Length: 471
Image 1 (cartoon, rainbow, N blue to C red):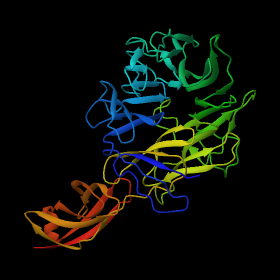
Image 2: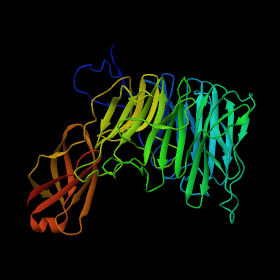
Image 3: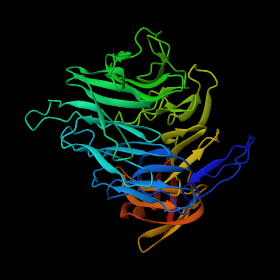
Image 4: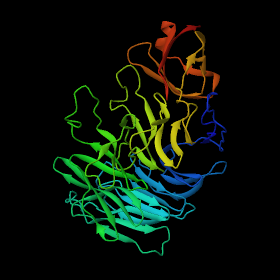
C-alpha cells in the first residue's frame, strides 16, 4: 500500500528517497508562527490551538491548501496559559486555563461544530485544574465546576461534575456529579457514557480513581493510582481503556529489579472485566506535557494506541547528547510495535491520531513550526545544523560579515565567548544553504584580534568557531 505524508506549513519536511518512499508532499501558504499548544483531527482538517507571539490564544481550523479559519479568539495572552483540545468530524471541544499553575486563574470550556461558532459551556473565575474535554461524533464531554473557593478559602473545592452535551445547542446538557472535594481529570467517551479520572487532592499530593459514567450517573472505581494521575485517553471498540499514568511518588516502580528502568509516566491498558491495569510496552516512558490533564502524550486511533515516548531522564539524557523522543503505535496487547517518527535535537511535539493517520508538530529549522500528518512511518527528524565557512573576516564599522551554511535553515543566537562573561551578539534566522551573517564585534575581541563564537542553534547542536579579525 502506498504511504503518503501530508505536511501543513511551508516546506515543512524534506525527506530523502527510501524504501516505501513518501508518495506526495502538499504545502500550504506558510509556516505556523508562534506556539502551537494543541492539535486534533477533524476529518481531513486539523484543529489547532495557537498563541502568536505577544497575542492571545486562538483556535483555528486548517485544511490543506486553504487559509486558516479562525474559530475562536480568546483573551488569554499569558505565556503560562494552557489548553486541552479534542475534535471529530462533527465537533470541537476546547478547555483553557489562563495560568495552569495558579489556583486563582480563570478556566473556561467552549464546544461547537468545526466550522464554528464555539459556545462557552463552563467557566471558573478561580480554577484548580486545566479542564479536561472529550468528543465522540457530535457528542462532547467536559470537566464542569470544581472551582476554587473565594480568596481566603482557596483550598475549598466547589461542586464538580462531568458535563455531557452536543454541538447542537438545543440539546440539553446532562451533568454527572462526582464526589465532594474531587475534580474531573481525563475523559473518554463511548456510546452513552465513558470514563473519567476522578482526582482527589490530599495532604501529600493527589489520588486518582478511574470510574465509568453514563445516564445512570457515576459508577464504582475500576482502577486507582494512589499517588498521581491516571487519566483516560481513549476507549477501543471492545471497551479496552487506554490510560496515561503519571506517578508523583519518588518510589514509582518499587518492586521492580533495580537494573530495570523505572517510568514515572507510562501508557497502561485496562481490558473489559479486568481487575488490574497492565503497562503497555510502547517503546519507552510516556513523554507527558507540563500541565496534566492537558497533553497526556497518548491517544487511541482505531484499534491501536499511539504514544509519545522518550527517556525518563532530563533533557540532556545521559550527558552525551539530547535524549530521543518518538511517536509509536502498538496494539493493546503490546504486539506489532511501530515507530512513526523520532528525533533528538529536533523532536516530534504534541500528538493527534485518527485511524491510520498521526499528527504532530515539529520545529522548522528556518523558523516557526510545521504541522505534520503521516499515515505511516517516516524518517527520523534531522537536526538543524550550522557550519561557519569564514575563518578570517575584516571588521568594518564595528561589524564582521561571516559566511555560514545551514543545510535545512537555522535559527538561534550567536554569543561571543572571547573572554569571561559571554556577550550575546545577535539573533539569527537563516534560509537553507549558505548565507552571510553580520555580527557586532565587541572592543575586547577587536583588541585580541579574534572572535570566539558560540552558535546556539534551535533544534540542533551548539557550534563554536574561532574567526581571526583583519583590520
